[in-house]
Length: 95
Image (cartoon, rainbow, N blue to C red; front, side, top):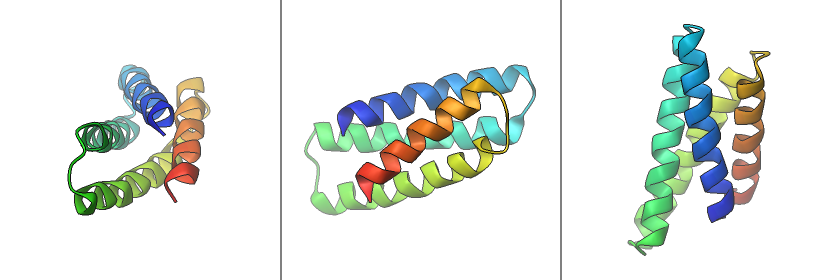
């Protein structure tokens, strides 16, 4: 799961940077939130925090990824396609 989390973090960060150049603020905001939630989940797992916290972060991560998928799927840019794909893969692992 760590590999999928890392990939999602990187693609969301990349997508937000590319979309910022194109002034696609809706995509930028959603990708940044998704990136942050995925990072929080990754760190919580790494530092073995309470299972309740990890489970809540998993739910938040799934929700953030689904928002990201919905937003990025509307765009034709490669970064958006990559971002949506990595989010879909992560959601499958987390559900």
